[in-house]
Amino acid sequence: MLEDELKLLFVVGHADTTSALIGLAEACNRAQQSYMCFFTGEGVHQLADPSQALQDVLNKASPAVACQASWISRYKNTILPVDEGSQADHSLLLAEAHKVVSL
Image (cartoon, rainbow, N blue to C red):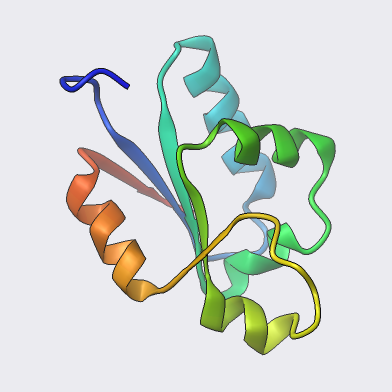
């Protein structure tokens, strides 16, 4: 990522926003715009059984992080398919982002 490039963060807090996230991420990819993703609360449900399209989004996100506490409270014995983080990581991503899209 170039130092002066726009830093975009998708904060995913709802389980039913998968299609919106995929659409926005695909638009970013077409425009060669990098993006970051943070999943929290009910948003972690999207990670439980991600479609191929969502997996592509996660693979291109830099980084893709989920709140470990949100994940464990819902999926105790399941491996998280993105980086584990905390609300402190969320705060760091917010500080780094130029624009935030809440889903």
